[in-house]
Structures are given as C-alpha cells and as structure tokens.
Length: 438
Image (cartoon, rainbow, N blue to C red; front, side):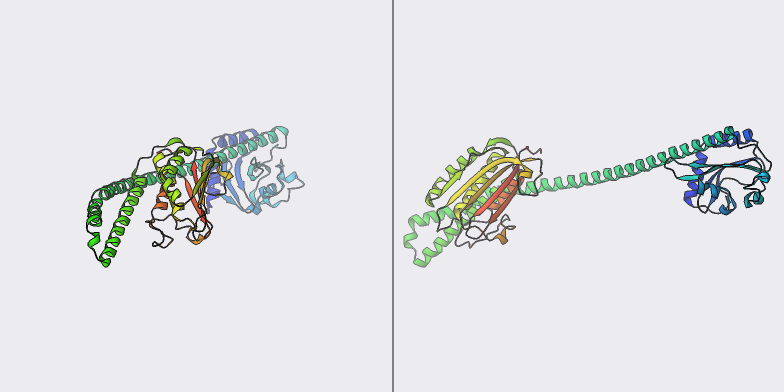
C-alpha cells in the first residue's frame, strides 16, 4: 500500500468509525450473491478502498488503491449516475470495456455517495466473477438507501469534527483568556502595591510639607516680620532691597508648599462622591474670590448650574483654581468677564471623540476674555510646574492647572483647554453622570 495523504487517511478513519459499514457490505453480498463489496473514496485521480468485504480474494483492503483510469467509478464520478451490469458478456455497453477485462468480473453495480452539500465522496460498489441479477428496483433501492445512509453519517461525523474544532478553539481561547486574566490580575496586584507605596510616599511628603518644611519657613517669616516692624528703618537701601527679596522668596516658598500640598491631597484623598448642586459650589468660590474680583473690577456670570456627582471639596478647589487663573491672566486693556455654563447631555452631543456616545456627561465650561495662551502650548498647560508666562509679570507656581486636571481625572472625566493669544481662554470639563465605583 502506497503512502496516503492525511486527508485520505481521515476519510478511511471516518468510514471505519461507521459501525454500520460491515453490516451494509454483508447484507449486500448475501442479498445479491456478489462476492466483493466496498466503499471507495473516489477523486479525479485516486480510487482508494475505505471499507471492504471480500469473499472472492479480490485482494483489496482499506487503504489499498486501484488506478483510477482502470475503474468504472471514475465515469460514475463524472456522471453522478448509477452503473449496473448483470452480465458483462451480454452488455452492449460494457462487453468490451477495459475494466471488466482487467479485473475479471461479469456482474457489477456502483452507486454514488454524496454529502448533503452535493460534494461527491465516492461509491458503494460490488463485483463478482459470475453474472447476477442486479438491475431490479429492490437491489437498486437497497444500494441507493445504503449510499444515502453512508452520506448521512459522513455529514454527521463532519459536523461533529467541526464542532470539536470549534470547541477546541473556544477552549484554547478561554485558556489564553484565563492566562491573560491571571497575568493582568498579577500586574494589577503589583500596580496596587506600587500605588499604595506611592500613596504612603505622598502622605509622608504631605507630612513633611506640613511640618518639617514649614517650620523653618515660619521662623524665617516670623523673623522677617520682627525686622520689618522694628529694624527695617535702620537698614541701608541695599539692605532693604535684600530684605524685600528675602521676604518675597519666603512668600513664594510658602505658596509653592501650599500648592504642592493641595496637589498631593488630590492624589491620596478618599473619593466620596455626592450628588451636588454646582451652583452652591460656585457661589462659595465666588464669595472666596470676591475681593480679588473687586480689585480687578471684574464680573463672573453664570447660567443656572446643574447637579452632578462630584467630590465636593475637590470640585471647590477646581473652580477656585480656574477662576483664580482667569483673574491672574486678565487682559489689562479689557474689563474682566468670566462666564460659566453647565448642562447634561449624551456623549454624542459633544464634539469630543473620547466620550462614550450613549453615556451622559455633565459639561462645565469656564471661559474668560483674558490674555489667553498660545495654542501651541495646549498640550503642556496642565503639566506640573508649567508656566507659559514671564514669572516676573505673573505670580504663581505652575501647579494650579495640574491640580485641576488631577481633580477631573479623579472624577473619571476629561478637560480641554483652548485659546488664542489675547482672545481669552476656554476650559471644557466633561464629567460622567454615573458615579464611578471604587
């Protein structure tokens, strides 16, 4: 037996799985008197035995081949029709056919086996060296019934194989997914450990900032206050200049420490969300900044603010920083006007691709008519210690807007800044309406 390709081996194994095949072949031989019956796999260039009963020592067993051109099955494959020969010697069509002459049979029957999709598999065939009466409705009906039954079983086994492949693919996918989940869980565990360490470091920093750093600074400020009230008049002009520089440096240091503390608190503070009327928060911030607004002769306008799920003390800090930013960077040639709006809508209603279309968001916009900023700095404006203006003209530490962005992120939201030089700045905040779960 020559070596068979895997797909032919599969075909032989498939027929071998059908426990009805030996019974079918036995019934055919006993009913018709034929000495050899077989199920053959037939292709354009191959004839291979898949199942066989051989009572005449024809010499074929499963896996053996006949040269396709020497068989009648090749013609059956092309015509898809049954061939029945009761007596070769008396057959006008086959009495001088090369196949009976080569294999020495006088009676022959072969029925095509097809799958439900119409694909030709092979034949159910039988031969015998003696004449036999085969061309009867009973015999033809029996062969066609058995051929259909074999085709049915081929379909069932093929469906089972396809199902098993899908199950194996699903199992492989689930195994890979489980592995991925375990890996991600481990990474998340490690990240949480790192985050916990970071929070401890931030808490330590907050403690140092609150106590160790501020204590010597308070002493400097106390001594500076004593000098200012009792000794400043005795200083030379150069000494007074040095004194003012020292006092201003201490004030900047105090502001920096306070801002760093505020920034660290937005990271380590627990997140307790509350449904809050934003108008109440805005009114409190406006009251806190009332003197600053009055000093620059500015006004704050707002529509009726909506309710939102926020961390109240953090959101108060957010609005305070944004309004303070507008006051600080007012246009000296214009009366300062700050306008605040808010409303709730679906993500698809806003022109921002990071929002989920079918989720609702609270949109808060804060815009002013100040000096604005160069659009090329849009990506840098929320970075820590970023100052886009001359520090001699505008006081600050470059932390205020970084705090704003951190607070927005704590709310699972987004913030955008847009501006043109000398045409004011606009800040758009989008907060999900559903309270995040932590």
